[in-house]
Length: 138
Image (cartoon, rainbow, N blue to C red; front, side, top):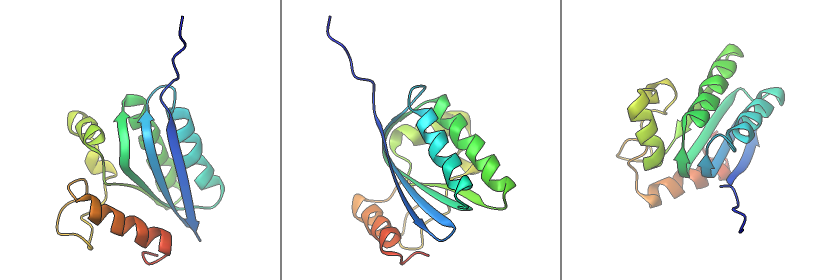
């Protein structure tokens, strides 16, 4: 009987002082949500108070992922900080639409683009990601 490999969640974190940019790719579900939660909790432990999460390459997110984001948003707000989610993929947008939770932590429209987050072209998303990694945003 062939074994199946569970879906993977890849996490890339870039810190700058008390800010972190976390880029996620893959699936957020019951198996991978603990990794997401631990990553966000580690940011707080490390003194990070402003967390921006790029969801461009998240192909699936269920209520386990939503709960991880909600818990992290509450914990971060409790420290006087914030958690913002940027560029939700269609899968994540659907979850937010069904649950009505997007307004809790989606970012405001990006000043570098003419469209709202989640509706930007790949070129616009890349430009913002490069700005984060190059330090132009902070």
